[in-house]
Image (cartoon, rainbow, N blue to C red; front, side):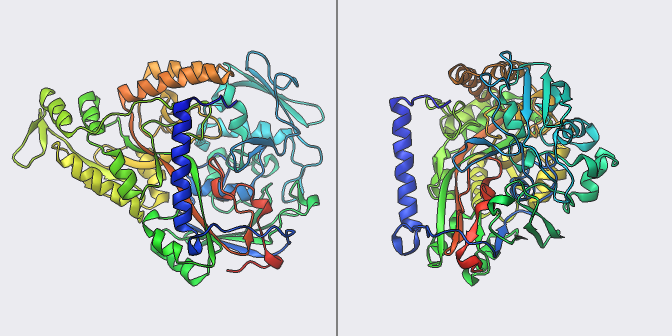
Length: 562
């Protein structure tokens, strides 16, 4: 599905490769790239991983938080799973459905998934297509409050085969990304036999952070919210006969402070950590017993605008804010060059999706001031613009204790002051930020918020911007609704040809730049680290992120060094 890049795209890729090579050479211990031990994997060991954000739920399709999804990747096996390069492969399913093998109808409205025989849950009970059917019904129940419902709401009916090894879904509309909606642990099936007697709204409350029945390479051993989550080998894992997983246990420690993570690394008590603070790069370089890894993320960093605030109905305010953001300054000062220019929601990891010739709004303080002047927003004696009794003063929030985002905030706050917009900064722990804070959508508390977002292996962006995804029905956390964008989402969902889909995404990008439901800042290049003596640590750009391929993590001599 990847189209041949044009000359401009090649230039961007070459430039990006140069940045990554320079960063890697600057970060590798002793200034040289490190090489992995290629000896035979050893079973055993307890791997310790520091999580920067506390997970908010460890039930499939119950959270949009990346750190929760990463732990889900150890606890649950999905019908399909992605690899470090972003390619999807069958997992619980026997194969990837296609039109050629009869798994997908020509109109993209009928999809058949066939499961491997003999699958089991961690408690030994059969795992089959009944569980997939039950998951669809549970996620479609509003009381469950599923994180991703775009595909779920399109299902009109489904039937399970008599041998319970296949399920056929019938959709109300064509939906090309349907496979991606069942990929990786965060979108894995739920255990019907365990949850069917429970009200869907009680599942997260009862077992949200301590799931008792799982299907992945590991199962929960100990859940201590706010401290750690220990997962242990699941002997009923579908690849157990191949000796997987290699590790005995993984301990995920909740460490919502980059300073503490650095101290753990300096003390050698953590085997790995993901989403590191780039401002601490010199300190990471000094850790001779660790290997630093960088990889372009699928995530775009955005300044999200709460459309519930009536002031933002004035497009001139949103456009002036976009013009007052210096993306190059953010990339070089806050991210130390570890970012890719981007002003929409599809970075280079998406094919289709990424638009190499997109023109971002130019940084123009004088132009932003003129735009606000012409729109009647007058500068007051306190240097804050006012109009009709309304002030351009907003709350600006992000996840707490994130130093490079704090630098973003300081830079944006300073530039907005130059155009008469005052920003008041209040930050929150990740579990609060991605939970009650954003979902409440309360103007005056949530006005502007910065976070990184990506999609599940497919560039379909309806989950973040479609009208029917506004909370509590979904995760349109901008509370933005536009019928024109909705029509474009439906068009790209109905097309399987990547070239044709790209043309629709180009229209979506232009509409977003015209209407500005959010302001794109940059595409992240992730920074992560793992200890020498640990192997197969290969984070990917999507979904499971850090824990892609976690079943194949292993340590020298079956003993992890932390």
